[in-house]
Length: 107
Length: 118
Image: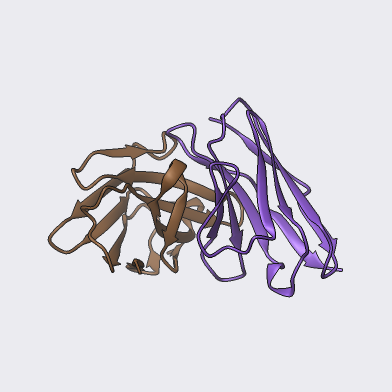
């Protein structure tokens, strides 16, 4: 299995802050990396696919980068609606796996 | 707008079989997408269970493969999940989702909580 490790597990930030979340794969996955946002009691929502492609309808303050084993999700200016848990997911392997999540909380 | 809706029993007895369906609306299940089941439990986070194409071709998580069957009913535009010999470790919220570009999941159901308990 390809293990996905996110850091940090949680962070506190203020509205307007720039936030960066990291995801590391246990082996190279090219750019087969996707990011999701999940709010309490809701299904995950796709933010980014193929590492750096913004899903339709997602605000441009979200961006993604990386290839191989190291990836980042950046929120350029945190908004109140962005407080949630974020997950990365690899789709390089037929066995798709997710990171453990990063909870973004209000400072 | 594609919508997915899971349904099924919320309580299953240990050693029993968990059976869920996912109704797809706003699009045909025979379009060129794979359809997946994903579950989420507090202990294990998000876990991919398996996927199916409308042709019936399916792929499963090796950790669950001996207990899982995913099927598609084109006439009803829905997919199904059967998970046998369940234990408390199978207690989770179960989601169905559509596989999009690069193997991402762009549409999800709202999820259904299944508790395994006697």
